[in-house]
Length: 473
Image 1 (cartoon, helix red, strand yellow):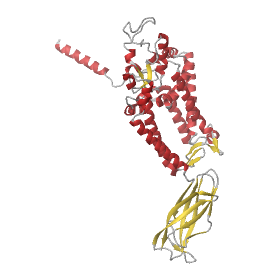
Image 2: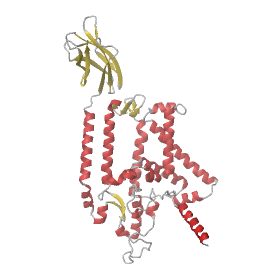
Image 3: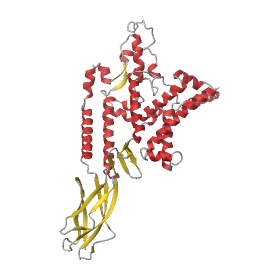
Image 4: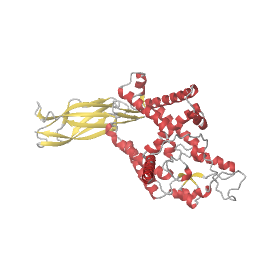
């Protein structure tokens, strides 16, 4: 008996261990459609972001695409601005400004970017709208998924996935159109794409289809790093979507005529609507959770329930932890938004933004690289003077052709031999070889410093002063 009991105990222990798992089994989230103020703003941002994204490649400026990061030409066109690889400094500024803007916005308003402007949220919203139109509301979708495969179910699923695929492929095509002129892509349809163009169209389109159609909330919960480090940017005065447990608890179902206070209950009737409308499937009543994207859908679901019960709105509301605990008024909440970290972020962001705008405003639309021909050292010319050969790369970053006058200074008697006018087409890089001569007595043996002046004709402000070295034998 003892041996049998021991074996049974070991078997039960093994069964218990076998059931332990560190991974939660995925449960599909069926989101109920909701109407309200927050949902309206969410759709406003969907329209704004997608109009910008899908339409920008089709805009024209001076006979070319207005917004284009042309990989072949190695130029970035942004309306009237043309940036070259040498302007990578501005990319660094853009990244710094974006980072500080994210820190500032999150410290003040929480994860509203996630709930309203994040591509994952936007495309998930679009895909769910398609799903709702094709398959029906939440209960209809749940019933359809549980039903066996029939002709009707196959047809609905096929239509839904076909629309998803079309949206995804068009999204991938649009992304590639930011790097290859859209006119060239249209001319290449359907089978003329290069390998990289086809790869990125399918790659980005495939991920759009997979993440917005299938992964959805799993991207926010398990893949997105922002959800993980947002905690370090929050503080008790950060605006968040939160439930008021002091007012709502103890929750429980009851009839409309029942006085909650008299019955010892809170305002929450435990209807569960705040859960079924949540894109990530969480229960906001359990407190602040990293899965919450701050979309406000739970507020849109809760407020109408409060209206029907004759109770004030705001059981779930957009406020701060301090405001909830200390019962701040709206004016007090706004007053607490201005705090040291917000002032610091704002000051840094403002300074960097002003510096970037100033740098772009005073930027000279001309770049020159001077490279001395290393294959030819200093040599004596027919007239007895010493000459060096240089290669000048003149980059015209304007949208119109320019003629530039070349001159040199720094040594007595130094001059350019030959043509001193260089013509460069709009937004082009032109390389020219020039010969510089000086009298033999003008400099010391070895390297001597000289300066090239390149000035645009009829545009005195477009000028560059470049340093170079002149070798004397």
